[in-house]
Image (cartoon, rainbow, N blue to C red):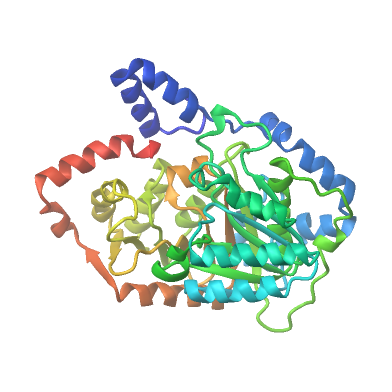
Length: 452
């Protein structure tokens, strides 16, 4: 069932096929087959790779793939940076400024202002792009900038937005926005399970946004999430990922790439080292799973994690328990009430074995928390799109930002502590006293959790 499948996933598929033989086989073919093969990756991305080779100059290639910057991070983390660059080659970028955004209102206001000031291009890729008030305002601005002559390119995830009437996107096209569906140009039944979960904005090659927030009033108003606004060299890595997705999905960029990768000024202060790490199901290695597992395994003092969905693959689950057992302060923050009705019991299915190992679990009350963050040992931080579950770490197209910086780590640690003020800590004694029917439901759902 694929070289990357762990035992729990195999058991889940065996149960489904055994219980529903005909339907189960069809479901496995559509949702169970894996495509992490180097030849498949190269075939799928050949058009982009050829386009990049044709239009990108040597300075752009050095900026994206030059390894000399890895020596700027702490020696004990250089192994991690090499691991993270093994799939698409992008390296650690210096000369970056980062704003950590924890307010949807702030993200909306900053994005609106940056879109208004765009002069050459706006590139946008989102899992959700809704039809509510905030989303419509962003859409209106994109159409306005396209009419002004700015090159506006937009990728929307097809399956997640299937309820959106095509007319919604056709209005953007009529205004001059270049819109592509992520599943184009060759729609395949076998790709239904692979979603573009990324959130990327690049404006004039100088400003970038990424993190957990989609384009929706849930994120702008109602939910608690974490995003980053980037200026500096790491924006070029976001640009590379976007252009790869855009061209691979059927879009065209047939021109000199230099305006898309401008030279950035060095920051005398607040210079941050950042590594942008995309992952996808047709690359050879599940790099985000490997990177997260490495970070957990090498934690010495503490590691604090926020995730809305906690369904860790087997290797990551073992790493979390090992880190706690060896004495590290391991804390995981999960929403008390999930946004999807079935995810609440599934999240809780892993509580018992984590608590027994000494992992501290906090359920966030109040606003639903959608953050996908990790901070460890006052140095490395991860802010990204990937949840701590099978879908994000093995099936989706995701993108995480690894930040190697003491001050940013302390800031992310304080954000975690601030959110703890609205949390209830789950104890092992409390968990053992839950009703028997809760236990039965969680045990049953845990069998199928790798497939959710």
